[in-house]
Length: 186
Picture 1 (tube, one colour):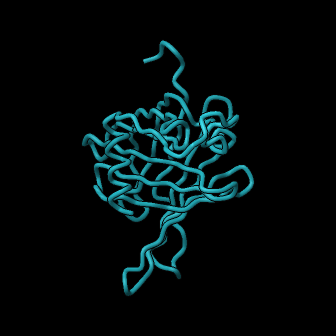
Picture 2 (tube, one colour):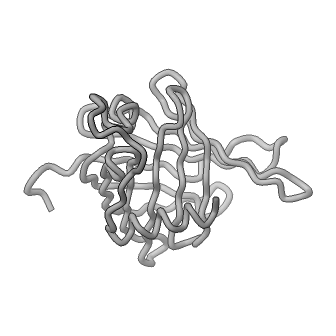
Picture 3 (cartoon, helix red, strand yellow):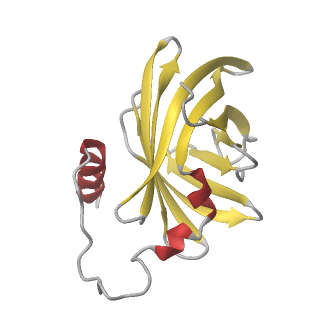
């Protein structure tokens, strides 16, 4: 499974064409028509990104980036490619979103700060998409929660929370504001 994800991300990063097999070309619906109807579909576009991120307990810094969110694999996934700075250094990330069922989503992220893949499962709560992840560290369970709020006009927000253990409260670690880049804007 891990090798498949690595191959998929590599192909997407390099822009290699991928074709789905076993699909009826005469089908009236594209193979991943459920993604087109998902709240994620509104995220496609070019975005200016402002974020506030936690540098330590109770301490935050600000940064900027640009993001491009596209449909890939004949619309089966959305891919976000983000480029900016973090702590004054170049930063980039790639995130894949997919819709498993009408109610379930997957999110896979890799970034230049951590270098490891992170996979989280998601669901829709009202008009907000919620992605959760956890890792058992033996002595405690580290958890994250990522909330994606709906596009309103030409903007949307995402909030990322961390809980260092099952007993600890959720702490805001990153607040991200996306503003759609208008054509001709640099």
